[in-house]
Amino acid sequence: MSIPVVLTIAGSDSGGGAGVQADIKTFASIGTYGTSVITAVTAQNSIGVSAIQELNIDFIEKQIDSVCSDMKPVAVKTGMLFSKEIITLVANKAEKYGWQHLIVDPVMVSTAGDHLIKDDAVASYVEELLPRSFVVTPNIPEATRLTGLKINSDPLLRKAATEIHNFGVNNVIIKGGHDVLSTESIDALYDGHRFTYEKLPRIDSANTHGTGCSFASAITAYIANGNDLKMSFKLAKNYVWNGIKNSYQVGEGSGPINHMWNNTQLFK
Image 1: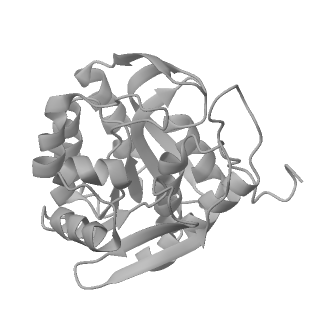
Image 2: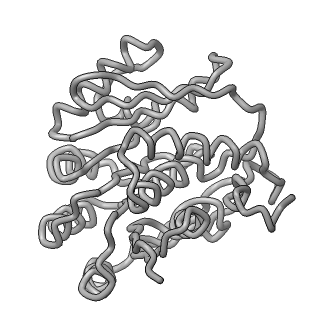
């Protein structure tokens, strides 16, 4: 028996709802074997982030080489890349190992509003990492930071997606979960030629911690299982939506989604 190996390069969430912890849960629930490279350690819970400790760049490199030289991940997802040095390292490793399916979640701000990237690192995303990605998955605040556009309409969302695509990205998915004025949660995929939308009813829930991490990880896992991007997009949207719908409260703030909702033996 074999199972697709996938890799997350991201920060650790001590609260377990986002970051590497959310990625590994998502990978496992969708039938892939998750490996991890930790870039930073956070002290956080459902309320917010109280501290961030960036890991030594040489140690991050050793983690990447240890996994990739032996386990050969078929798809790689990035999350919290705290500094420009880490982004440059990941971009160089993407080229070295020939990652054809690099899913970049440009984590910049947490659900609670905490900044998860240094200010001088955004340019490194645009210049070094995004051109090596298969798909990038910013939410609306992240797309705004990448483009400078205040996205409050579909035409502006399309303009932002086009600008991000022009950075050299193959595919752009802008997540619309932050558009609280809409009764639907609408995500848009742009492949350089056309837009594809995935829409589901908005769920009134505070348990949305780690939705962005889980969405990008779900895309990674579905691609590793042989699905094309459009189907992976649809399945990932459904996975996160059901994770929110079937969530449970952990902590006093924004709780996690239920990553295991699709396991019929758990959380009935």
